[in-house]
Amino acid sequence: MKTLLVTQADLRRLVHEVGIDVLMDRVIESLKTAFRTFDLARTELRQREGFTLRNARTGVLEWMPVMRQGESITIKVVGYNPMNPRHYGVPTIIATNSVYDCATGHLTALVDGVLATALRTGAASAIASRHLAHPESRVVGLVGAGAQAVTQLHALSRLFSIERVLVFDVDPVAQRSFAGRAAFLGLDVRAAPLETVEAEADIVCTVTSVGVGEGPVLEDGRLKPWVHVNAVGSDLPGKLELPRSLLERSLVCPDFLPQALVEGECQQLRPEQIGPGIIEVVQHPERFGEWRERSTVFDSTGFSLEDEAVTGVLIELARRHGLGLDVELECLAGDAMNPYDLLLPEPQGQPGQGAPEGPRPTIRVA
Image 1 (cartoon, helix red, strand yellow):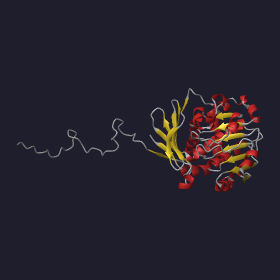
Image 2 (cartoon, rainbow, N blue to C red):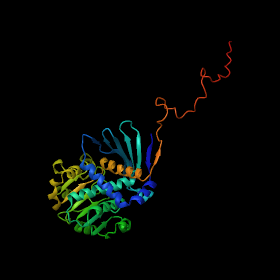
Image 3 (cartoon, one colour):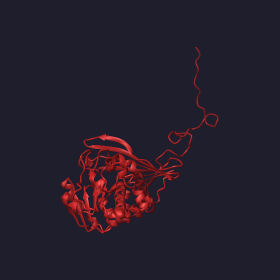
Image 4 (cartoon, rainbow, N blue to C red):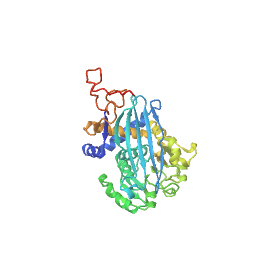
């Protein structure tokens, strides 16, 4: 039994084969299907758990599982360290996605999770925006201009006719460089003060690494009455991006409520102040159409159903284009009752089986 490994090099070739827009479109469609067809009787979700990393800034290493009954289990192991780009030159979020067979426990695939996480997070915001944002939304505001901001804008551009993009980041280097990183989209991208982003954007994505207890990163007073906010950065208890006043006057749609209550914007709200989850919104859009004229918030903490959807897309495309490497990672062949069967040398012969016995030891009697 073999395991498919899909590496960075495979993903680079995959993007060259299919195109980055097609890849994002496939992820959006896969995620919409996952939301629309979700059945609690067939799919078991778990909120993420993990370890807190006591670095210069609080980080985590977490695992995010989902099981499709009788089929497969997908688990993402993800590390978050906001100092990664500056100290180590690697992304804030580093992850691997693994898929297991429910019948045997065999690891069927292991896929890079860095690109996968960025793709599915952007896709989720785009889907939420399509259902909750004003249909004539043309101006996107980005608060935070790091890696996640790229895929937020990319995904939105696949579903909305964007005329302007306003970008703010407390790091002036990140703010200035964003237009170059998003140049492949061909959009009018401008660095702007936070006040301008708040006042002019129809859709705002907050994608920051604000520290625990340091938020919010937005003010409520200048926002448009119909603003839709994709709050993406909250992923720890006490880490918040949005002011409570905005949440209290808006339809707040969490991605996965048990998780959002612990580490999302929903930390700030009472249960009766929290609206429908994204799965309900996608399954019953007619119930929430009137909110597209009012303020709405997608509380995006990122959950395992999204990881399953994007991992499935990457595996399918890798197989279709002959990418990835099939390896025998686990010791499965040979004698299933002997864990050493493949590891020890073959015996040269046993007494009584036609093999020479060799000299017998001499026994001395005192």
